[in-house]
Image (cartoon, rainbow, N blue to C red; front, side, top):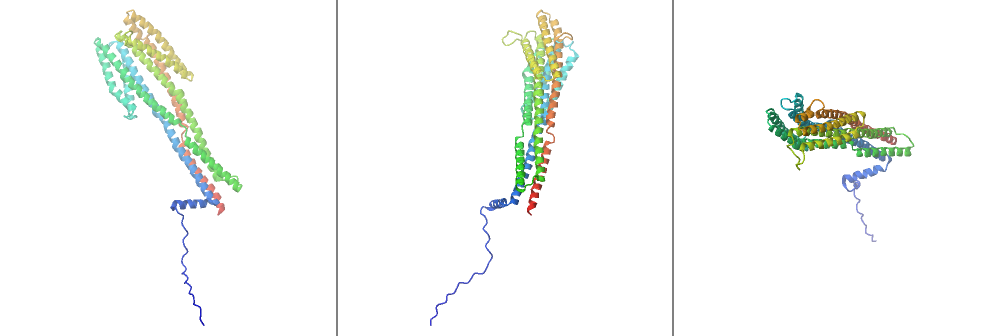
Length: 460
């Protein structure tokens, strides 16, 4: 009997370890993304993500606010104690130089023997003040800047000017007419070299002041935007919690919301007060200071030219040869002075300022009337009488000029005080805000984490 062939089955493979699950392609970043998506499908995972986002937003709000407001506060401090004092010093340099030129011409007109000691002292005081202010400005200015270049020009040319003044005085003591020529050369150097350099220095420092003021007043838009985003996210998270759990309050998130709201209100109110203070300083202080400085400089130029009319005795004519050069420049200076006082009167915002500007205006009117008497006396051939009407102690144009100068000096001091007060109020409104915003941001982040952890504990 034939048996069918037996079929041998293949041996079963030995049992081994199970194959590892396939790893997602794309490396660690893809794996992290996969885990994040997996976590977001569960409520605890979603809560962790919400907590992380809330903490990041609140911390970002505090950090951005601290950085932006620190920049604004630094600019406001520069306005108060940096650029504005330097701008005022630059104006003082100009005034001192112009006043020195006026005093030098007054002393020369009085004569070497009869030159009043007070006039000589005034000249020396002006030169010393201008030199000291230039040294101070040089220590606070880069040599390569526009201000630095003008300071170098002034330091180089000022000794040349004083040398010519001393030569004029020496020749005048000897009764030599050449002294008048040296005085005119000195005046020309003052008007064509020194004063233009001083004007450029003042313009550069004033531009720096305006830049600092603009920076300090600029709204911290990024801080406000991040703060509103954080506050919106917090309100959304608390509403979500309420809808899912029917619980009205989450103490951690509520504390974070309060801290964020407090920081946002502090930022808004503080910066608004700072802007108001700086705007008041600019509108009611700095603009008046600029107009009053220009007016005082115009009066000094007019006075120097009035003296030079008698010193030159008609020897210097305008380019067309038809009129006395110094008489024409005197008239131009007085016209500018009148316009400046009109502007200063419109800018004056209190009774004290208005009274000082009015006193200066009355002095200008008296000065013009007396100058007409000087011109009449001089044209009549009474040179000595004309000189007395210019530099005499009583009833002279010099007396009227002193009245105008004192009123403008007091008005400048008044407006400087108003500027400083308002600018300090603006600066102080930002005090403590950078540190406060940073602290509130950290506290808010802690509150957000604690609030979310309280919800997570319910799933354990």
